[in-house]
Image (cartoon, rainbow, N blue to C red; front, side, top):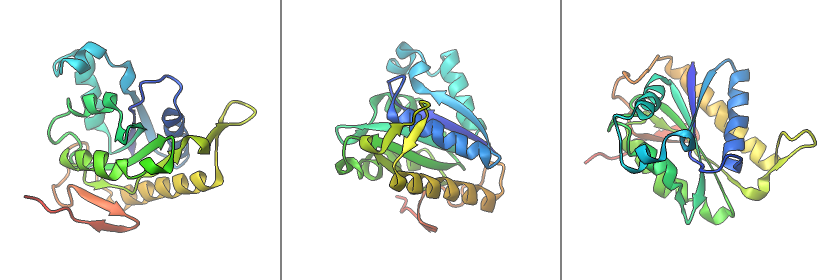
Length: 204
């Protein structure tokens, strides 16, 4: 299945980006095809001025539409996900994540920012129509390092959390067995998933 990784970090060499690339490599070993979308590479003017019709914004939206699942990573700044990521999500159609399975990843300076994903990012992903928003994987900066070859080195605790998150994503996609590509049924749209039990969100 085709998966899109979205990096919401404004930095070229960020911990959240490295965590995302590490997750993508593990997903490829499971047989998934992955595409990359580093939001920082999109034109700043188009993002700031909401240029929906800009060719690079149109192509980025098409990447999201083509994906079966999305792994989205962001640094946490002042108890919220990055403004760069917010500017891109604002440019997606109202149902831009319709039918998709989303795994959020985030990094921050301390565990105090853990709930930023639940209270800031998750509602936006649900509002965009994500079919399932899986349990987030949050990492502190101290849990991500480099090995002697310059590769990513995760703490044992983070490595386990990431492995569980990737396994849950893989299992959810396999269970659904639906080639969404933005056209899946609305059934189950907007659910949060914690562990293996989906919690249906109330709709007004």
